[in-house]
Image (tube, rainbow, N blue to C red; front, side, top):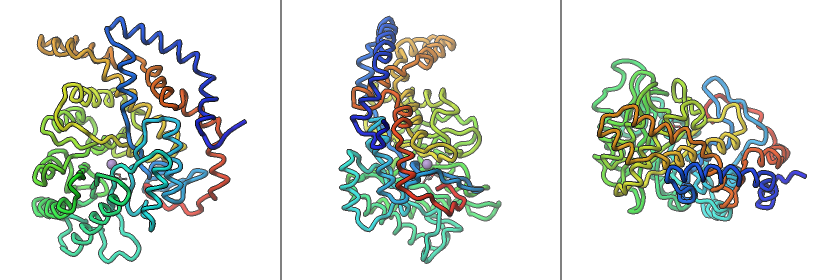
Length: 431
Ligand code: LRH
Ligand code: MN
């Protein structure tokens, strides 16, 4: 008998089907790791401490500029989005944070929303501003930019919007603002490179000055799109320059999809760690551009190599190292909750595998210029199937051994389809 609530009782009931197999696989992995002088229980505790925030815009069906094909039981309000995020949290246990986007998640009663979020064991992670779309009744258009627009009135409007996001965030208990702008040009000559960067920085300074003491602001670089010739904050170098100019509360956010193909993103991550400006991540995956596909679905080895840098920094006690981990994906053809759960599992897998790297052996191979020795050391960790370890961490926190099977068997989507009338209009666009 299905249980569309996906509550603890349902999860426990479904877990009974897989517990014996989990114990067997976990013990076998434990013996394998013990032969490598690795205590599986120590890694389980690390994994139980790991968290990645889910994007509120990730529980609905995403689209492209061509079309968006809404799925059944789409959430229509921020409250329904939070309900879906809570379902992912009950099954995965490592997603207590929800990242919100304004105005997509704007509500007249932030107090009510805060209580609604807390009642489900969640908290509001970073607030995302939006000056890449025009809202009904907006005075100035962002067609030609926002924080870097040549017209001070447009910049002022965009600054005010970001300050409003901070105000809403304070009311919701958030402590970070994430700023991505699409500002750029489509043709040579359209956007003055130096002046537009200067204007962008000047606008960010006004936003920075409005930050409460315990807040951080993340600046997110992106190579291109929606501008197709030049983008104001197009790479990590520009992001680092801006974050350094702003001050200690400003940090760089790395969206994995915001780089040219074949860029060594794990090296960018290590650079930002080294200069103390790594603020956080938008995890996803891509084949070509900013495809916003599910994390670990296309390049799982790259995701592992990124976490290899992060775990190395964490284990070596890098001061002030506290990156915000978030997903930022567009689920165009899957059940968004299944994509989120699969992606959380892949990110957690990479985090766990990075703990299996024998860092003394690696440093020794690097010192002896033993390229194959070094690669083999990383590959041994990457080729270790840590699924039983990650599932055991979930199980011990009251989550599902097999989240997607438990979710599918619950009839949750069917129930939401009955509760939430299908959306008729499906304008093109990411959400
Ligand atoms: C821009 C971006 C940004 C979000 C948006 C939904 O491509 O990555 O982080 O605001 O996607
Ligand atoms: Mn992003």
